[in-house]
Image (cartoon, rainbow, N blue to C red):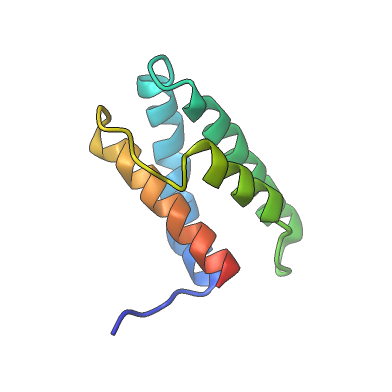
Length: 100
């Protein structure tokens, strides 16, 4: 039986890791995958809205919708490293928890 994370659990688990990975993946893969620059902007917007919301649930529907569109529902390109894949997987988990 898989345990489903609440958004707050997912946020607490994933945001700090994403804060480390996203800038590195952007620097390494942004040249060959320019869509990742937009992923980074959206992640930064999500992070800012979460911080601004404090204990309340941030309104992130637009950001997650754009992420799904840009990433083709978090489909990992075939020519990227494990960190890139990890970012997409973490963002997908965060998205799922938000809408769950």
